[in-house]
Length: 396
Image (cartoon, rainbow, N blue to C red):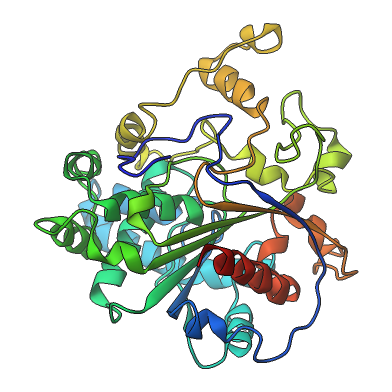
């Protein structure tokens, strides 16, 4: 998407502003000082690791539902809210204990990242976590929370913050780029669509965007790297400094090597399970695949009117024309496009040479979560950091 994007959605298929890189990647060691230029050359002073969907503190919206019920049950409201708080407190550690570094950023991953880059930049996990629910509002709430944290913890103007995010965390970064571009009418529409959202971060972010230049001065300090982020919301190139996308990809069509194997007609079970064509989830989780909870649905629906207002209706062939519901019909037609790459930024399409390492369930890490889990693994961090820094070097 262009500068002055105004929360427009990416189309299916996309048109890339730069030619994607296609690489075969090997997990190899690097010298201790190899990554120091992340700070010395690219002026990155802080790295924030942000997990994706379903590994946060309220992935199924259970705490949210309990709090909603508490407003109508005053006699037990306190108990319901306490139980909701307890669920949020324990869900993330429980999920992390099960998932470890498969589709999830661990503290060990953070420590390895810090060891690789040296004392600068400071590497941290997003704290507090986010709900990780699969809908527009959950991602909007994360974008606003990130903006509030950036405002409350400013860096010197010469320094940068690197947002390193997995899956739909990247789509929250896309929203953040539109917020920081600060086109006032569309930003006002965004906050109006989210009217009723609670939390101090909403007030902090809203106030910070008023009466400041467009784009917001913070925009030039934001470096974004996404991993396995589905193609959804458009990026505003005025709302950030650098943008890189990393995705597990195997060439299906030699005439269009950047194209994913279409998900409709559906892949065979073995192709899905063994990530035969790269990350299946990244191709799947496009427009039409959200699952809002009952309390969040009004906010989700209002945001959809803003975020999807420009999304073109797909052209249907005989294979999709007679699918019963419009939502499924349109989603199947969009899956047919095999859209893998984002419109803006540099897309790095990586095919992984197997390491022989297994998940706790005995699955090769390169095939974990249908190909969606490899990019958060500690074993592949040095290679990922190396290729990302090559990409940033090429942009300098």
